[in-house]
Amino acid sequence: MTQTTAESAVRKQRAQIRVRTLRTDRWWLAPVLTFAGLFLFLIYGFWAMFDLSMLAGSYIAPFSSPCLAAATCPEGARLFGFAPFGDWYKLPPGLLILAFPGGFRFTCYYYRKSYYRSWWMSPPACSVAEPHSKYTGESRLPLILQNVHRYFFYVAAIIGLILTYDAVLSFRDADGNWGHVGLGTVILVVNAVLVLCYTFGCHSCRHITAGRLNHFSRHPLRYKAWTLVSKLNARHQQFAWASMVSIVVADLYVRLVAKGVINFPFA
Image 1 (cartoon, rainbow, N blue to C red):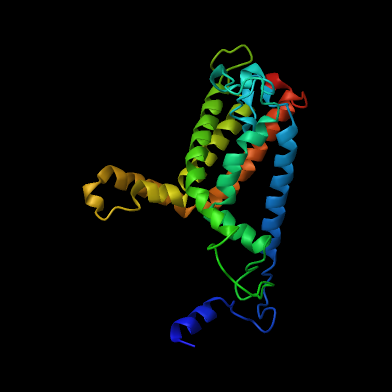
Image 2: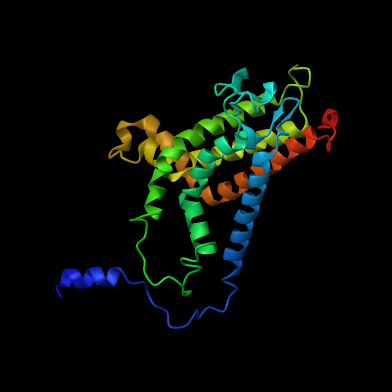
C-alpha cells in the first residue's frame, strides 16, 4: 500500500473512542435543548403553515409574508396589493414562503452544527463517541446539497426586507391612518431587526461583501460593509436563536389578534 493510499484510508475512518466519554459534565444538555428548540419550531411552523389567520388590521403574520396568491391571501396581506400567482395556487402561502427562509436556516453553518449534534449525533459533543463509523463530511449526497446555502441567502435577504416593509405597515391603524403604535408594531419591528441581523450576519454575506479582496485599502466601502457584517457574524449564533424565537412570537401574536383572542384596539 502506498503512502497516499494509506493516508486516504485513515481519513475515511472516524476517530475511535473506546469508551462513550470521559467527560463528567452534563455534555448532553446542550444537544437536548437544541433538539427541543428546533423540534418545537418545526411543530409551530407546520401549524402556522396551514392556519389562514394571517392578517389583523395592518399586522401581517411573518410566516405568511409575502403572500402571493389571490386564492389563499386576504387582500390586505398581499405584497404591494398584488397577487402574481392569481387563483391557480391553492396551497397555503406558508408552504411557498418558508421553503426559502427555511432552506436558508437549514443550510446555515450555525444550524448545521446544531442539528448535526442534536439530531444526527455527529458528533453529539466534543470527546464523546458517536454511532457513525465513517465520515465523508459534505462531499457527497445528501450533505453536499448544503452548498446551496449561498443561493438561499439572496432570497432570504429579500424576504427579510419584505418583513421590514411589513413592520413599517404596522404603523397604520385599522383605518389605514399612519401614526399607530401598538404592541404588535413593536413586536414586528423587533422581529424585522433580528431577522436582518441574522441574515446579513451570515458567512455567505461576509464573503460576498469583501471575502475575495486582497487589498482592503483599495475598496474602502466594501471594507466598511465587511466590517459591519463581521460584527454581526460574531454574534451569529445569538441572532440565529433570537430571530427564530422572535418569528414565532410575532407570528403567533398576529394570529391571536386575528382570531380575536387579543383585542385589536389595544394591540
